[in-house]
Length: 449
Image 1 (cartoon, rainbow, N blue to C red):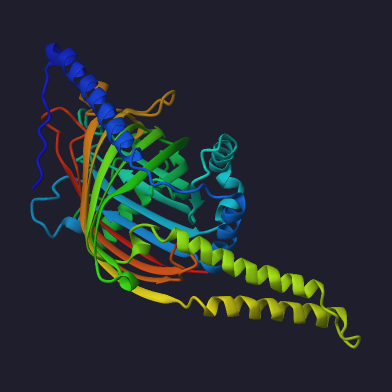
Image 2: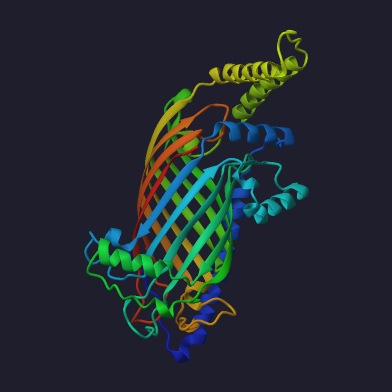
């Protein structure tokens, strides 16, 4: 069992505790920038991508890569099989549905992220980046105190809190640093009755024995209030140990280091150290074969362009009408595409690995505990009882079926199953309600459209 001791302080010692928190914040920032600069200093020498190369890649991926539908399910009762581990009900549940596909970022919902891309483009900061498939997601997340049927708020414990959210996410790969960035802009409605209805149903019909009349009437931002969250994650591989020959080289151990910055209903910074042990193809670890990919993409585009040029010069039979000519042109383009694809057939890789991660983070403000600024709530935790320094730990197992082609930098389709256990250090300082939180996670991804 993980255990994390938090220094306790009475009223007289609170200034000392604040000094400790400030020092932790400073140390976290220093460590963050130290490791970031260390990784950037190890950049690979390569030429920047031209706009034509980026356009070719985007065009190929939008045509060839299938969409991926995902279901993420997180519940505290998934760990009920481990006696004594899950005594608290702090993180009640999280459920999300997502769809990932190249090109879906052209919608109006992605405007904030597209505006940021435009700024990066005019500043020249995107010259080494390629676009990976974007993601649209929606779901609900809920948190409760230990006692969930108290008529009055449990002073000293965390308040009830939930939000219904919609996320827009863009992923990018840097060919110079081999880093993957994940930038998201999230829209949410805090304080709705969605979780109350769902939790009461679960306790009554799915996991009976828990309270049904739950005290959501004194939740954070009761009645529904809008909130937003901007999040930026940076992850870079550190170690990659391989086996096999050049034609079928696979990784058996990888590690990565990164950071995350949040601004919104969660505001803070954090770092992340992760590892994987198993059997992984390079399509699931990094995009180190991008140079060959670019050459193959250019080769395919040349086939298309030559076919289009030949169609412009074609002399049609006088007996053919406009519709017949159009049908003939489409057939020729399809044949040209098939001819190019036959040179790079589909390959299938079964990947499996155990993984783990540890994420120390500093979150000075959490609206689900301290309340939304300028929004009055029935009960919020006192700032003096809130612990902003947290550690998240996750470990589990992943099984994937990946279909890939050598001229596309990402899998054309994939199926993923993930099972994991999660732990979070105490978010509360006082002795009565300070505790670790534990929950399980099940994730499924499969091709769709």
